[in-house]
Amino acid sequence: MRLPRCLTLLLFVLSISAFAFAADTYRIVHTYPHDPHAFTQGLVFVDGHLYESTGINGQSSLRMIDLDTGRILQQQPVDSKYFAEGLTAWRSTLVQLTWESHVALVYDRFSFRLLRTFSYPGEGWGLTQDGKSLILSDGTPTLRFLDPTTFKEVRRLTVKDRGKPVSDINELAYIDGRIYANLWHSDRIARISPQTGKVLGWIDLKGLLSSGERSTPEAVLNGIAWDAEHHRLFITGKLWPRLFEIQIVPEAAKNKAR
Image (cartoon, rainbow, N blue to C red; front, side, top):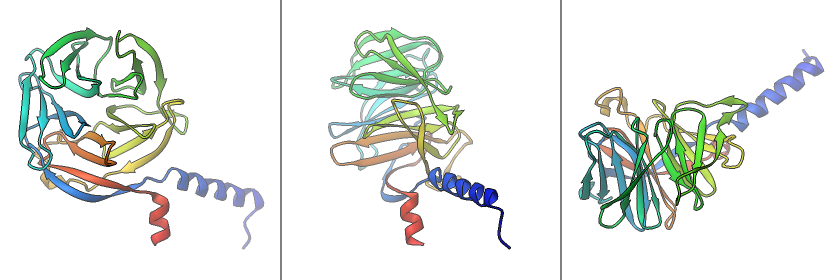
């Protein structure tokens, strides 16, 4: 039976649309130990060093981690009044957000000495930078771009997937001209255009850490770090016992291999 021309066209468009937005997956390159008590809120790899921000009032910290062993090489406790969140490096500093206190902490990257603080409206969730601006998420579909010197808002962007706003945007990383963002309580990472806010694709990390290895329902994906020099992508989560170096497997490559 031949389908009507209009129905055939509709099915073709739907199949193309589904393919265009099908999620990429991953291949594990290497597995590293990670502190299973670290409530990971931010992860940064810069100049050969891995830095981590951990949360929870009274347990929040800034850390430098030995990648191979997971050992804490350097640590700065955060005042118990703060629930630490996202983290990024800017030149010789590290900038750490707090959740509901509207305060960011700026440290010397080498000594971990607190240099200054600055305030911002709304909550602080994830943080990254694109070489020009700091990029802040707050759990809404809005990303805010801040001047790294004055910390004033420069512009904002609404993240949308096929025209619909994307909520619960959390940990951020800026990789090869794209913003990578995980969604809270999700094993997916969005690739976002920093010009338009459009989701350009998804990465499905389901199964990266099994449910049996997650100690609580809050042990969710929440750490993305990029080693720009060696093109390595690191992923971990809150209370995860392991950190993974992964390689993205494009959906097109999967289809070709079938």
